[in-house]
Length: 310
Length: 61
Image (cartoon, rainbow over all chains, first blue to last red):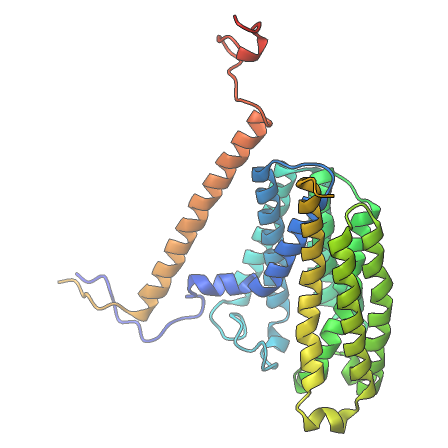
């Protein structure tokens, strides 16, 4: 009797656990978890810690489910781009059907569980976010319009609103401004990436602004959106969730962000190629810090209020 | 006699099975925690059937 017959080579679909984790886009999820947590914690309605933890967990699972659906649909272009060709589906470790089933199951599960843990409004908002990311952005906008990043950015902007809704059961000016902050931040963030990852998007035929309108226009767009982002970021300081820490952080971060966008706008291609896109790469890295710093500052102000310092 | 050789495939299956097990145990813990949080509603959990509810007693009773 033998329990291990001859297996010539691993078959498709024999993924390991980590491949399923990779389908959830854990790096994107870290942003979702953090912003949703801030949205939930700065809300004026106190939430039981266990309910708050469960709410953030299910928001994260929903984001992961939509990430898996995105990888299912985009497997063809992921296979072409250097940055994404080792993802589980294009690499053949997970079959497209498995990714689809995994994404749908997790999405449905997360929506139902968020409704049970918190309220129907928050669950409805999560359902809309998943639909927006998987269908509106991934299936429709991404391959159709160079404004894909602008409108698709809304999907990444919803988590703090869902966190706020999980606590309060509704929407308010503060949660809309938190949404707007991420929404306006997304285009400069991704266009900076597109400037130095250019061959990737060209090869995949994704109509990024760099491909359709050229790099000069993209640089101008980065500056324009950064300037539009500033009043949104500063406006949050004047709402009840803002405070002195947020105001100082927002002033400093926006000054540096505008400076970075201005530097990108002033440069041309020969200058960028000479130093291997040093300014563009620095701007992209700083954009991540920018967002984490804004939401971190909101959290610190909330903790200071809780401690009775303000 | 059973073949003892460990194929790479078995390692991947084991990682999936162990991972799923951990996720399921975690899910049970979350549901249990949520249940306690919802039932207690920020107060002590009290029995409602055939027992005296402490919160209904007079002070010192």
